[in-house]
Amino acid sequence: MKAKESQGKGSKLKNTTASGYIRDTKNEYIIKPSDTGARTDTTGAGDAFAAGFLYGVVNDRDLAECGRLGDITALFSISKTGAREGLPALNELTRRYRQLYNKEL
Image 1: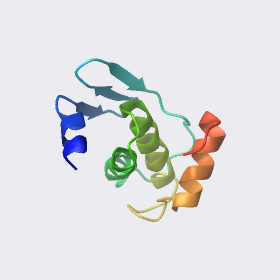
Image 2: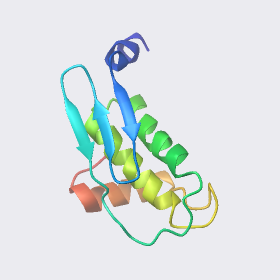
Image 3: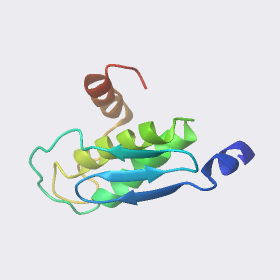
Image 4: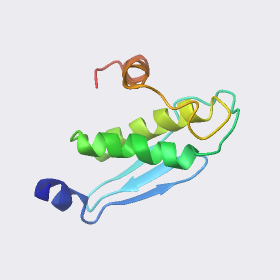
C-alpha cells in the first residue's frame, strides 16, 4: 500500500463530459472517449468512471490506462437506465478493453 500511496502523490484527475484529463508530476494525458454511442442515462457515470479508474490503480496500471478503464466503465454505465444497471462484469470490461486497445488487461 505504501508504494501505491507514493505513486498517487502529485496526481490529479479531472473528468469532463468531452474528455478526461489526468496529470501526474511529470506527464499529462487526455483520455478521449472510446465510443460516443447512444446515451440512455448518465446517472452514475462519474462514479462508474471512478470505479474503472480505481480498478486500474489497484491493479498497478499507469494513469493513462486507468483513465481508459474509467472511460470504458462509464460508457457501459450510460448504456442503460439507472446508476448500476449498465455496469460491466469483469469479463465484459476485459473483452471491451481487448476490442478497443488490442491488448489484454
